Length: 80
Image (cartoon, rainbow, N blue to C red):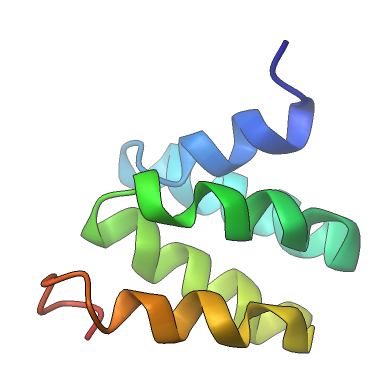
């Protein structure tokens, strides 16, 4: 079963309106959302990953550091 937060993470890859709505909700949830965003990060496309990075930045939780380092090897020039 997918949690509400996991669904929001998946929506980061959606159309712009859906993605930014999910972004705002994840930021509002705050640090409780960070583990799900970290876990979902590798499955997101470039736009979704950039939006996830915005969530990390706004929430300011340092647990995302290793996840971002992992993106450097992704080959996605948008997030590297």
